Image (cartoon, rainbow, N blue to C red; front, side, top):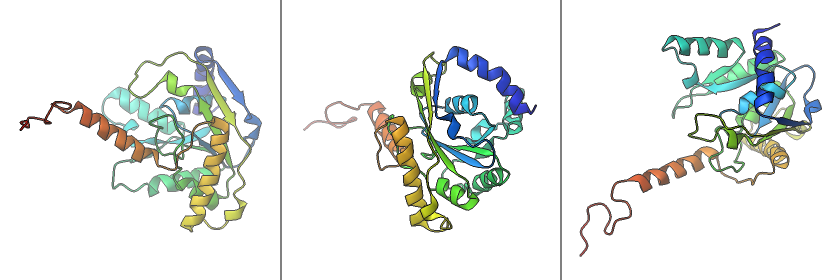
Amino acid sequence: MTLYGLAKAVIAPVTRALWPIEVEGVEHVPASGPVILACNHLSNIDPLFIGVVTPREVAFIAKRELFAEGNLAQRLFTRALRAIGQLSVDRRPGQSSQEAMDDSLAALKGGQVFGIFPEGTRSPDGRLHRGQTGLAWLALTAGAPVVPMALTGTSRILPSGRRIPALRRVGVRFGAPVDLSPWQGEAAKARSRRAATDEVMAAIQKLSGQEQVPRFASSVKAELNAAAADRARPGRGRRGGSGEQRR
């Protein structure tokens, strides 16, 4: 048994005991060969439930901050992430994600299951946002089927800012592979990548029931953070602004 299998043998029963999981459509996941699981993203805990319910080993891209080499606990956690096939990506502005894309492509060419959150980050408002076209590039380049999936309930378990997970029910729904044949062989074309990605996002929306918006989650999150920072500024809401005298 692989390290991934050993970890899952321990984690899965505990996870299912703490959070009852309702699963639909798992038969849509191919028993072998490369496949991309494209899912909505509501919470940092989402990969846990995807890994627990998917019958095959799933590799994810994780933010590089999780692969710390500081204290002993961080180093052990980093080794564990890499041992179970998790890939890191640098999400800082101006940093290239090509290395992560190449690693993801290599995983698919090796016949693995690759999990991806096309929105690129957690939904800041519970809605389903525009997908990043790296999803389509991977699918069309590797020739791998894309199985859409949707999670429900995870935003109530570990919302942004919460450290201790709440005990809630979770729903996981898999859909039939999305037909991307109209864009096969067109991975290099931006319009084709956008159209194929939009097709996958529409399939995810049907499974999740979320309101879908034509904006990137990162942009919405930045606006919400800026608004929160503005409200927190000293003097906000006072007459005349911060320190300005009324005439």
